[in-house]
View 1 (spheres, rainbow, N blue to C red):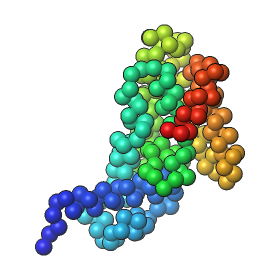
View 2: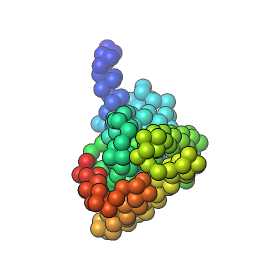
View 3: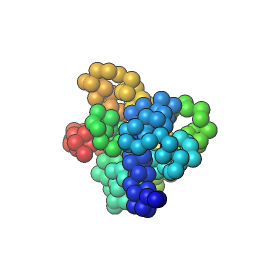
View 4: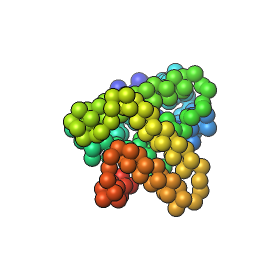
Length: 214
């Protein structure tokens, strides 16, 4: 007797959530299909009823994480300095790595630096491009509203600098075992990005504390 449709959807959702958690914590190469199915409490053989490969699951779990992330909600907000800086502090946060909660898409992508798997690399490059375009759109809109002082020629480089700072800080922090030093690395990167975006000294402490609590 075949399972009802809702049962299959529930099983797929459990696989996606388990995959997103494991990929965010350990990266694509270090996670096996067996580990994912064990966490999802499903049999190994059930995997191929939902996905044709681990690469297909990685892509699906990333897209699901992206749709449900705080960053996805933030980019729909009105254009303002506070929302742009909230987005920056959210992307650089490793809060989710230390808690058993659903990890955001940035945690998944940052794990895949230098991965030569063709499908994973393609997704990584697409994610970079999407993030860069999103930052460029918001910086451009804020410049037109006279809330940021950048010239048109500076916008793409500002977006690249933000992403490079985010990726560098997160990658370095994840390799450090001391929690205090990890937080110092992240806060230093956040501070420099916010200063570059024109946030004054009085606002810095508030924005950084809000980013850590969010």
